[in-house]
Image (tube, rainbow, N blue to C red; front, side):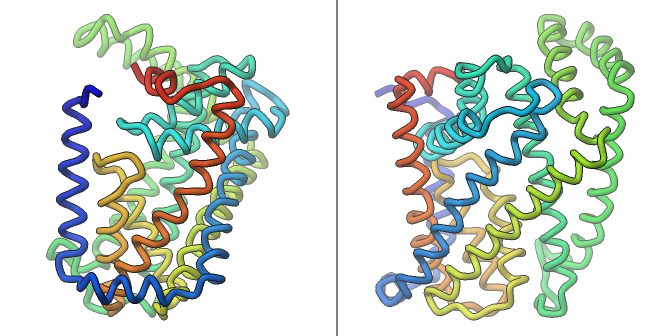
Length: 333
């Protein structure tokens, strides 16, 4: 099978980050911690993590409402599971493209509108994760004097608040002044890349339509609360998983580790985000004084176990829909 240069870079990054994450661990102690984990608590953590994909599908409905009112749950659920499975098995982070493709294949929603709605979905994710990470950093349990890249963590917390304000202003500018922003894009595209002008205009229009939830306070609140519930429950799953391997930290630690994981999984890696997940987990827990062997035991066990259910579910729905992994791989081309 032919391997792309992007795949090779992802593999190299994964190997490097896994080495970095586990360079100070003792594999025998880490394995012992995994064997001694509380199976019941870990099962609960994984079950909660899997249930979050139900919330993702439900949250997608109000985002799609402007282009597809009252979308039934079934297509949203199937597209979500197949997309998440694709993220775990296919290279180049194909999951979001696959998710949009499956929905457009099964419903009357155009691919561009489906994909734009997922961009909006990710914007809400980013805002909520940043907000929860800031909550963790302002918590009294956050380790005092913590330095990140040589700077006090409090500096990043302040920057995060400023960043949220800037993001909110930018989103509302797109919602309330879409025509003006699209005209600016057209002028820029004609000078720099004319062949992308029409496609970019369509994507910007779809994105602005997707962000129309910001025009409707009740719908915005609905999407916001779905996103908040999703990421708080994800942190609960992490915290229960911590307890399963004997890690005792405040709940705010799971919010902070979650924020680091979301940041690091944006780095190119192999399918399933192996490497970035482990490094962020071990580094974050180390700040709270957690032994590297325990942190590594949680990172590997929870990561692997949480990937399995949604991957199996996604493969099942893909098979029912007549979609092979090869066909899904071609969606991104």
